[in-house]
Length: 154
Image 1 (spheres, rainbow, N blue to C red):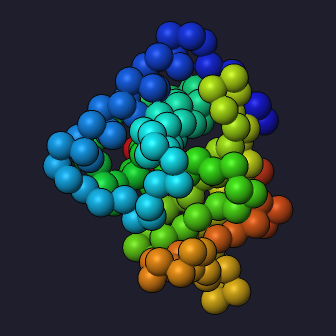
Image 2 (cartoon, one colour):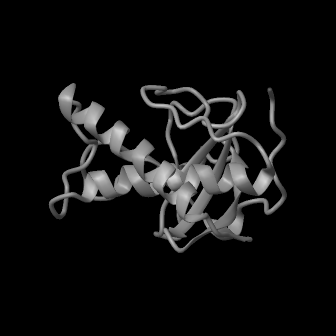
């Protein structure tokens, strides 16, 4: 399902991403992976925030535009939204008891790719350490995701 954001929603999502990025810079948080080009992390924060907003719009819930909510669900108490255009959904080892949602796209529209339970994603054949940075995670192909909307715990 494709979700289109209005100009106001794009601006709100991009400002949320900017706030998240500025907070990371000011607090000297290191990225898990090095930037491939200047501004990559800012753009990633903005696209990820817009993807969260698109998912919230799709299911009809409020986008909280939070920052500094590490290891806390993005939507309700159990949904983590992940943005990526790689064709894989990243699930971290410390993602526990949550639905992990895949969103892809760009500012002109985001696509809901489906979701998987964090526990169902943690199979050895999904575990990878792309770039050999010593930070492995589980990368689930999009065709392994459920296209139904995940249940929300409020």
